[in-house]
Amino acid sequence: MQLVTIPISHYVEKARWALDFAGVPYTEDGHAMILHYRATLPHGSRTVPLLVDGKQTWRDSTDIVVHADSLAPPDRKLYPADPAQRKQVLDWEDQFDKRLGPQVRRLAYHRAFPVGPKMADVLRGKVPDWEVAALKAGFPLAMAVMRRGMNINAAKAQQSLLRVREQCDAVVAALGDRPYLAGERFTAADLTFAALLAPLLDPPEHPTRLIGPQWPADFLALREEFSAHAAGRWVLGLYARHRGNRGTP
Ligand SMILES: N[C@@H](CCC(=O)N[C@@H](CS)C(=O)NCC(=O)O)C(=O)O
Image 1 (cartoon, rainbow, N blue to C red):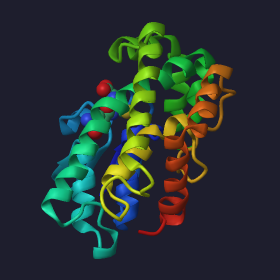
Image 2 (cartoon, rainbow, N blue to C red):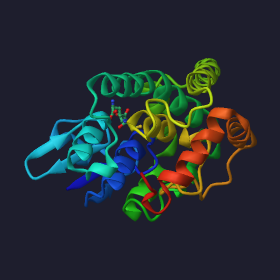
Image 3 (tube, rainbow, N blue to C red):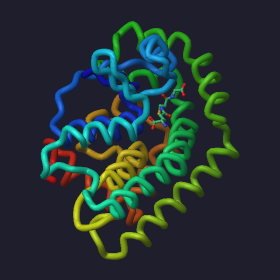
């Protein structure tokens, strides 16, 4: 199987973590933003992650997690067998996909863009060299396309910051003093929240650390704020326990 990615995408990380957790073998075909269309459009998709297995494709991160889970051994299931609990996990996952993912992305890109063309260095070694060079050369245009496509501006980024804080507070309230969102085990709900918040935390176990550019102070301030938030601390713990060295169930 081949996972078509923009390596730093947090929806990609969600799918990649599920595949790694399930122990499913795959190769990653990483691309720079915008240039990824060359790999996705022939399969009828604009977005990554995209999983390709021969003629079959999975074009959404949740579909990929569900598929990975169907191949996982019993001690590595990310969805509970109990239908009510499974629904609870899928509901959390859907909520994070809709309410957290786009807000984190808008906020992170808005604060990272001032780095300029050097931002492409974060992809070095993970996508073809020529794509890093092309993204650098066309950076002002790429940034304009991304700002437009994802409605990224100062006012929207500020709104996104408030939405991310709300989602973090809601998760802390839902957790209470329990270690996981649904039941006694690590599930796709926990994994999704962790993967989608990860760009603001840069956990040490993350396979695509945000290393390369000298990030602006207000980008690093996000890391400081959310690493200190109880939800961020919980996510860093999930990465340490369940992502490092493929983690333990
Ligand atoms: N619902 C999709 C969302 C994935 C998504 O938004 N991917 C972004 C990268 S973070 C993307 O490919 N954007 C390119 C575009 O929309 O043109 C999923 O869960 O897979």
